[in-house]
Length: 256
Image (cartoon, rainbow, N blue to C red; front, side, top):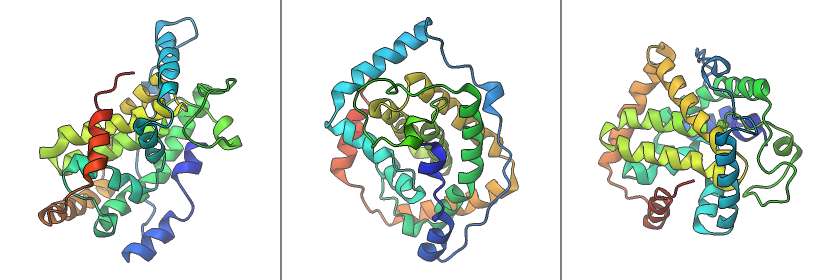
């Protein structure tokens, strides 16, 4: 599945409006061009590509285990779903219905982030690790997925950018939130749809995007509302799901 198909779904703006009582407007954001600052993906003879192959083979053994199921969960890039995925890291339940500004911010970032990542993928044209094999992946095959490119990981870019936004708003939970952002990216390795180096590039991509947004009014104005919402919701002291938190804590110990 291409990043645009999984991520910028056509109903996002109308869904936000109907669920949260506001209209998410398309915003003009200036994002850095990863075709210039990201390193190229490794070539077949390079040690990094051999590390990629080892990570892919190792993670095929996780099929149907708790980590595999977490990877399946993390494949869903609906903004409301992604926000909720960071509940354990935040230390309280991130109910998207009570975080309209956060949903609105992510929705407004969706199209420009998707466009940047699509440009980068089309530039390098790196095939996904499962292509040409009969190895299991954690999501359904489709022409959009099988024929799309891998580098950098769009899911990882999005997850790391989301983690950076939340960590900025909740600095006392930054360690846990960024750890969950790492796990979110590693889910793509577990899933078998990205190489390890795709994910590493996604972390760099998300960091660069977050840095570039810091002085852009369209971003900073929404961030102020996001902080207010999160602090108010934290005061409600609604605990996240303990079983989910245990799975995420175990995932944090994995090395690929």
